Image (cartoon, rainbow, N blue to C red; front, side):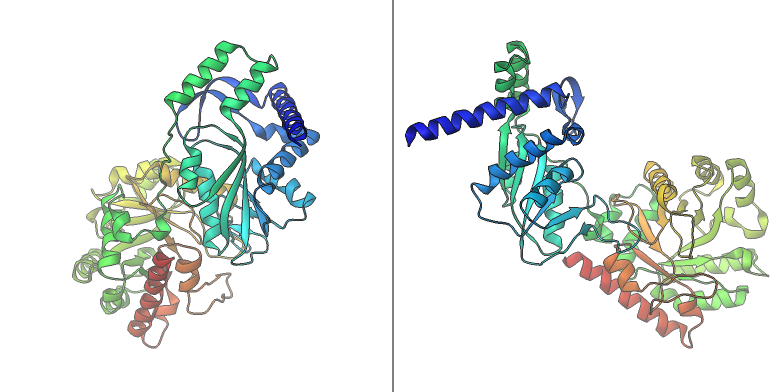
Length: 480
């Protein structure tokens, strides 16, 4: 029996050496200078994405991962690979062992079901997480957290390689057992024994391990579970700071889109619903009699009721042109009555530079990243580009108009248009969603309501209703 066990271990080591040698031969193990996700410089890099082009090797990796965990844990009800390298590995394990698979998206999709975890979720069931390499454990813990958030139990993770840089400890401190097929020390020894590397290379990697044995996880801010006040401290723009702070102190995340045609109507509605809103969104160019007096009255009401005015101009031209549009005397924007203006990201950074060069100090832009109209072209790469621009200019860009949370930047405020008490649409393609869906499910920050308020028989009580529903959804989100 002892001899059989010894022979079994020898055979296992021989197979592992062969696997490591194959990974080296296809270029999945590289030596040089590489920056890891954790930010540290490493002399060795593992690019296991290459194994998808070598089906027998992919199958072998999935088999050794399954053996590493199945020998110690009885069973699981589902399996999930950390995106993206571990997805094909988990797929083979799922298929071979008849284990239902779940797919975690790095970001919830902005269309269809908008789910972040795809597949049949059985709350309370156990899910095995699969990863290729663990360094700090950040990616593993992000996946575990998302799976737990939808009601799954995650107690075990299996990885091919533990880089011995603190990942095991970081993961296991969160109550999750990490099973690894190889450590980096073992892998380097196997490479030495198979003649793939020199002893000098092994010594260099071992020294690196000693010097970087405790890589800390860089904590990511999750704005969906942070209070507006906490986020205000992380915002770069003064208007963003003010807006986030007043949303908590005033207990409202309601923006009122006052799409009316006369100054009298606008001022009257702003005064009436002002106590219930954080933003008054205006369209000065649809009013027949907008004047400096109108601007002064709105500015006074913003002070009186503590809200921010956003002129929804949607500037969308080159920098020089938007400078001239912004400074047009007819709408008095240079007087500072509307510290926020909207613009399209289509022209690129020049539209931001042009506007901010002539805007009063303390102003900010809101980019239109998504729209609530049917057939909108503000989707896909366009939306991604808008978010990239917004994240690159936090001192100028206060927020984005969107239908879904698109960024993890805590200082970037997500504002959702097309909100009504009941989801519906209109004859011109407007698509409505509820306040609960926008704030509670899609994790945006502010709902924008227009016709739902100004067309109501009692705009004030209706505004109060939207305010309460949206802020309640925000409070519920903080408790998750």
